Image (cartoon, rainbow, N blue to C red; front, side):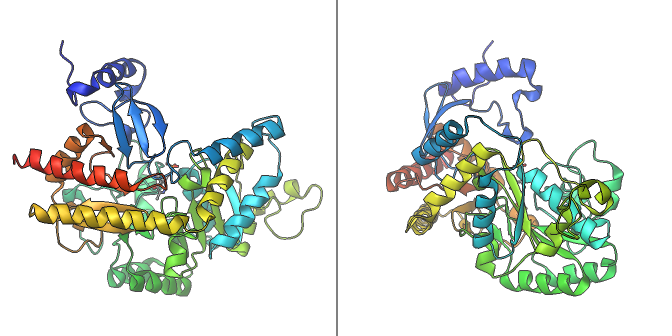
Length: 455
Ligand code: PMP
C-alpha cells in the first residue's frame, strides 16, 4: 500500500512512523509532536541544522521548543558535560553538591525577582511547584491564569490554553475550558480565567474574587511572542500587591531568550515567583523556581522558621511545603546549563542573536509585502512568530483571526524546502544560525509563496 507521504523525500520517516505506531500511541511521545500525515523522524543535529532519516537537511527553527539557544551540539556544552561526569565519576550523586549553589547564585544575579532557588526536572514541575507554593503561602486555594497561556501539561493549568471559539465564552470573562479528557471538575471550578492585555476586565474579576485567588500565573510574553503591554503588566503587579495575590511569571520560554534576566528584566517588574526551564538545561530536562526569600523559605524542611536543627525536618513537617524529586539539581544537567549561560554571557553574543533575529524578521516582512500578503512578525529578543494579518495582536483571540489556513499551507511547503518548525509554530533562533541560513530561509519563503499562489 502506498504510504501517505508528507513528500516523496520523507519515505523513511513515513515508514518509521508506521512502526512507531505499533508500540507508541499515535506514534508520538508528546501529542504536540505529531505532524500530519506523519512527523519527520530526525537522526542528527549540528549547529542550526537537523537531518532526518531520509538524509534531508533542515534549518531548525523549532530548536526543541526553544531550549537549544546555542543550536545543536555546541562543543563547549558537550565538553562541560563530559568533564563534569569524568570528574564526578558518576552522572548524579543523589545528595547536595556544589553546582546547585553555583547555579542558584547565577540565577539570583540575573533575575530581578529571584532571591532563592529550587530545582525541578521540567518546566511543568516548576509551574506546578510555584502554584503550590503560592497556595501554601497565601492560604488561598484558587488559581487565576490567562486565556491562551500554556504552563505545562498538568490538570491545574491545562485549561483555556487553546479553547474552541464556541466554548471560550465572553472575551471579558472567559470560560474555564479543559484542554484534555481526564481533567477533574475540581480544577475547572477552582481556576479563574483572565483576559490577557485587558487590565480593566482583569481588575473587575480580581476585585470580585481576591479573597479566594492565591496567585496569577502568566507568560509575560504569551507563547514567547505576544508581549504583555507595559501598562498592563505594571498595572497587574500593582493590583496583585494590593489584593494579596501572588504574581507568578512563567519564564520557561522567555528565560534567557529576551535578555539573560528574562522578560522581568525588560519590563522592570519583580514577580513573586518565577518558573524557569528549557534554556536553563542547555538541552537536558530541567526546571527551576525562584522567588522572594520569605516565600521560597517555606519549602525549607523546617518551613523556614529558623535555622535547621537536627530532627527539625520531622518535628515541623506540617509547616513546610513538600517538594521532592529524585533528579532535582542534577549535576550533569546543571553543568550543561551553566556552560550554556556562560556562552550567552560572552560579549556581544546576545546582541548578535537579537540582530540576526531582527534581520530575518525584516527580510521575511519584505517578502510577504512583495507578494501582497498581509503579514507581520511579532515577538521579542530571539523568538518571533509570523502572523498573516495586519491587525493588532494582543491576545489568543486576535491570533485566531489571522489567516492560519494559508500559514499552514506555507509551513508544509517550507518543510519540503528544508525549513523546520512545526506548522503554525513560532520561530526560535540560536547563536548557530548564520546569515546564510537567513538568506536560505527567506528564499524558501519566497518559493513557498510562489508554489502556494501558483505563480
Ligand atoms: N511553561 C511554558 C511557558 C512553556 O513554554 C512550557 C513548555 N513549552 C512549559 C511551561 C512546560 O515545560 P516542560 O515542557 O519542560 O514541562
